[in-house]
Image (cartoon, rainbow, N blue to C red; front, side, top):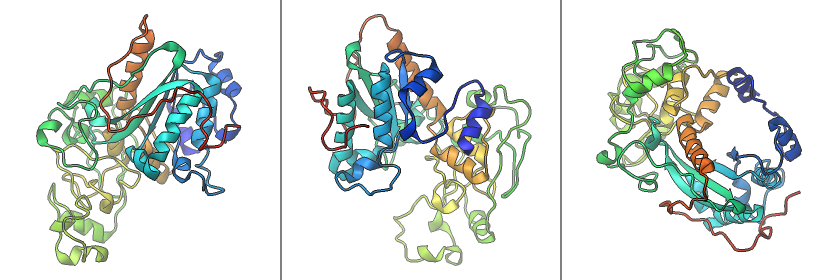
Length: 380
């Protein structure tokens, strides 16, 4: 697998298991980590929760259905002090909240008190408006809670920013911009690759991203584009989108579209703006605001990685499609680091500490019982 090759390249001393997680035992993991049950500080993962969205009528053969259960099966056997799960905010409303109730019962059944919050990557130094739903569960015998790091950038607190709503300019004050994220990277044409840095780093973020990277940068490949898409991009100024295209350049499917819809399609980024959430389809201009502010192309793999806060020394392996997928599906490293540092701070505290409640639109119900939840099959 390409992701495993990427892991081995960047972290050659850290073991990785490649295989069916349903066949992975806690003993395997404990052996790799050289730990006993209960000694592990943190078990973190991003298991898909789609299986909960069709409770009682799950489609046979869908490999995603049991991945969350397998994750919690391993968690229950490993008994880590803290369990961390990240996913998309939208899962909270799936099936009228059935997914969230299932997750609550899973934590309770394993012996953990858990909370959830929607974290915005831009509030932690990532140059990107990316929301993630984060669940943190503490083993009950520890008498602790919390782990959601206070924001370090911007003026808003946790839970103050809501996905898919217009963000007031003053709330974005302090967020990193497109210019801070990628302006020092080499000029490159669509379908080409460049290696030499464009300029010296001009801000602290660029300096941090270029630490240990040398004189050249890897994965700076700009996707190849059709002539019609190149013509569309050339016709747009920074901040403009499909509504600013001449009618003859509009895609056929958008000739009848309402002007209030799809406002991010074909949008050209601005240097002063905060980049939008990176997805696996960032190479396609109709997928969103992924067109370079001044060069006639969509952003390169390295530029997308920069917006995700991957340092330049981190290299992606596999085909170009593999690399798009790895960058687009990743949790921003700086967001992950902020959460990890906050959890580590709490773990190192000598006395149990009850953190203040985190503002969140959603809450996990923590029943007093520790019985397995009845809406989902018991773990094997």
